[in-house]
Length: 262
Length: 262
Ligand SMILES: Nc1ncnc2c1ncn2[C@@H]1O[C@H](COP(=O)(O)OP(=O)(O)OP(=O)(O)O)[C@@H](O)[C@H]1O
Ligand SMILES: [Mg+2]
Image: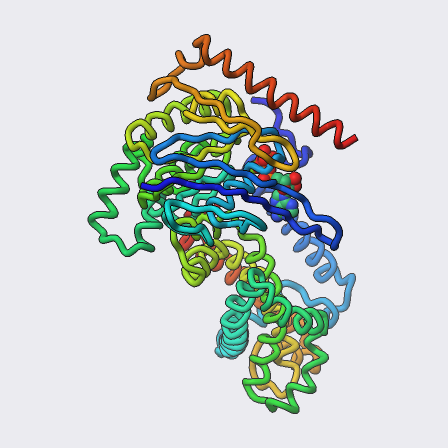
């Protein structure tokens, strides 16, 4: 178990044809404590994906450092699992094949692979679909497999980039409940990114509100609802109060960004 | 039952109607042929009657010469095609995903790609002689550049996210290439092979233009000298049928080997 430190990190994407680059992330500092469920919420295009990709090691910061425990993050690795917004199952592998992929790379024995895969298949409720191919699954099922695939190798932290963004609202609600249950069961450290304020409050313990271009952390809101969370959480007065607050905060940002664009 | 909509774009039609339209279309072609030839509207050394073609078939199948030609052409086409595939598929996969390979290969392939292969025949004769190698080389050259570029497109189309998932699951670069990039390209590669198998067959006459003593191309060219038009027709029909058979075979192979691809 380890703490994720994001320390004064910036990322400037170079402009395609010379010129000034795009400042996607501007001097962001935050920490995700051990076993915590942290969420980053912010308007579209504010740099959430970029920040998460840096934590995954898929993007290099142009300034600052990221550390997991006492290890500097210099590239991707199996100690940080990632669930992407788009569907990224390997279509040529069955559900089981997908989930076992990382274990095979790590040279885990057949028997143990089976056991661990079965455990997470049950955890995401897909035991019956072990031998199905991705093309036979719905969007929600594919994302459940993706979550199981990221968890099965027992990473130190799970990075999630709007994994439920493409789902219909019914399915999304169920997936959010499932995720709070998984977190309650495993206390796996999670950094979850979304632009959906309700989703952020429903899921997280700590919500980092991000500003639009250049991306910065504007404020951090603590949310204390007990886990696993359910529909009742959504209707409690505290929920509505927190939501008002974050709404106002992000609205301010979006308006500011629009003025800058004009 | 509602009346089927036959003229709506992207709208399927009932299977029975599909087959019926195909039969009518083929029958119309044959009917026109019959009217023109049996009706004596066109001289028989320009357009033989179906009876004459059938008689040529019976005769040449009976004395075995037809099968000798079929075998000669098939072996030339398959050898050239397989050799081209062995080079083009791996090269194309690398070219589509490694810019450095693309930079090295693209100028050459794009230059040669539009050259008619027949223009290279004299050079080939000079370099490899007039034996079997020359015929195989014509098919090889006819296929290899086009196939490389089509496979490169397939490879370039593989979602980068799929490779990134691999890295976050602990894969090395080599593992990403072999265990993700390669399988991900398979359906597209099979399609490219199918298209280029057709291309290979279209080069059979060019391949047997010079110093051949057997093969369907030779059979056709030889028949032209004696004005045996019915043999020319027979050759054309047989090449068409062989193309059709290999195409169906590859289609069947794709479905059998890649049940996961839609
Ligand atoms: N590879 C890249 N090259 C150049 N600019 C980029 C690149 N990736 C992202 N950007 C820019 O960086 C900014 C942040 O992008 P990012 O995808 O991180 O935002 P986001 O908050 O995830 O948005 P969304 O909610 O739409 O997913 C955007 O202005 C985007 O145009
Ligand atoms: Mg994003």
